Image (cartoon, rainbow, N blue to C red; front, side, top):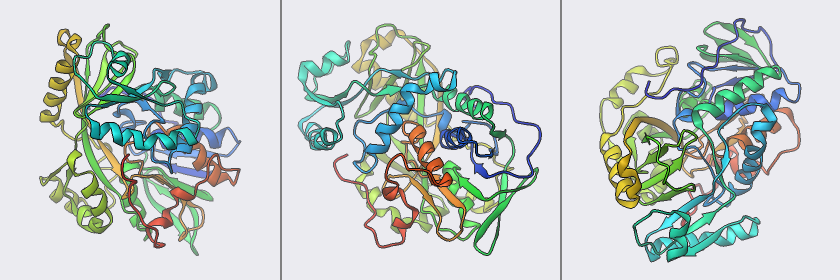
Length: 434
């Protein structure tokens, strides 16, 4: 495993009963556990592998409101509020810092794209500004490129993926949640269209509600219950550098380059391209994803390799055999990212690549998550499909998921995130220009 995540020990005893069982120990699962436990609800979180072992520990670490789909923006803003208070709330370090985010606009077309988004920011009261030329470069000192401008949100932040979800999991446990690692949930126990519990590899748990927060595994898991959730995964490769004292403080993204200063003084860097492996689900959900594939084709590379046969053979019920999705590093992407980094910011020429890794990002056809009850089974909830946004909106998403499960007031309107949008005739597609 190419990343080192802060370890979270498993509780020893599997409870026989709970109010809620959460399937999945990424940022969404642990945040949901935290907010449910704070309400005195008995929670058991079951993770087939380790906390934050997959994409929740491998992402860029951005906690942004900038550039969000307008339907997701209220949730992103609530999540940022929670991030800003999370270290004090849980008494642990997540690595969150307010450093700002910046979208580089190298040309007029990209500038106009960001300009078209600004009315959404202003209507939401978000502190965003579109900067020209030298003003844009002043946000990212040391850059040598000549840009048309950039979109800047100084109130956005960053956190450390390898610290955050483990810290939140420990805080949830401190508030009464049970955290089980290396404990796969094999199946749901339902009767009469209602959740009665789950069957885990360590035995059954009786409960009245289940939250599926399994990231890239969620669609497969729900298929066992006859629930259709159109979800595919893409692979992204990332690297980190040795410390660079003269690098920019603000997290930045532009064509071919994304970078974020880490607490250790190094940077997490990506080219920004993703690989979409052709697997059986690619055909199962082809019509659902055709629109987004056309819209995002410049940033996606299709690849047919051994994953097709391995996933076809694996079928269902493989959680105990494949406890960790650990894709091989896309070396071409790493090389391109390094070249773009050092040509744009010469200060990085004195650094080196310390580590590289890949992660599997789960996505939906409209690039919005599902945070919803599942109509077909009373007591079953889904919180997945975060499409690369899950870490940044993870706290708000966990809060909203807990709201739905507990029946409390919702932190934001959950309507845009309902599962039924994929079956009720709604036009499902990403919003253009974002």
